[in-house]
Image (cartoon, protein in one colour):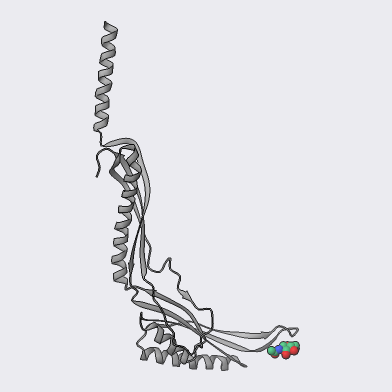
Length: 237
Ligand SMILES: *[C@@H]1O[C@H](CO)[C@@H](O)[C@H](O)[C@H]1NC(C)=O
C-alpha cells in the first residue's frame, strides 16, 4: 500500500504542478520575433526640379558667357514664377576633343550649369515649360514630395500601423499553439524618410519639345517597419 500511496501523491503533485503551469501568463522560453510594416499615402504638395544648361563655343570664356546668359534668364523666370530654393548645383567647363585626329585635338569648349528649384505641385509643369523657353538643354529630374509636417504625421501613423501589424502576425502565429502575445520584450522602429525609396522621375532626353509639359504627381507613401520581440502566453494583452 505504501508504494501505491506514493504514486498517488506523485500524480497529485504533478496535477497541481500542471494546474500552476496552465495559470502562468507567460510560457517560459516562448519568445517570437516578428516584423510588421505600415504604409500611409498622402498627396504630393511640391516638386523639386533639376535642370541643366549646356553651351558650346570655340573658347572656354565664350562657352561660359553663353551658359551664364541662359542661367540669368532662367533665374529671372523662376523669380517671376515664385519658385523657391533656387540654387546652382554645379558649374563646369570641359574641353571638347576630336578623337579621330591623332593626337586628339581640342575643337572647342562646353560649359554646363545645373540648377535646382522647388515649385508647388501644380506649378511644376509651367516652370518646366518656362525654363525650356529660356534655353535649358536638359531636364534632369522632377521629384514630388509632401509637406514635411504632413509627412511626419503620416510617418507616425505608419509606425503605429507597423507595430499593430507585427502584433497581429504574432497572435496569428500563436493561435495553433493556443497561445497569444502576453508581453512585449522589445520594439525596434524604422520609419523611412521622405523620398528615400522613391527615385525621382529622370528625363534623359534633351529638353526642347514645343508641347506643354504635363506632369502627373503620384501619391507619396510614408512607410515604416517594426521589429517586435514578444513573449507568448495564455493571458493576452
Ligand atoms: C576630326 O579630325 C579629323 C582628322 O583630322 C577630320 O577629318 C574631321 O573633320 C574632324 N572632325 C571634326 C568634327 O572636327
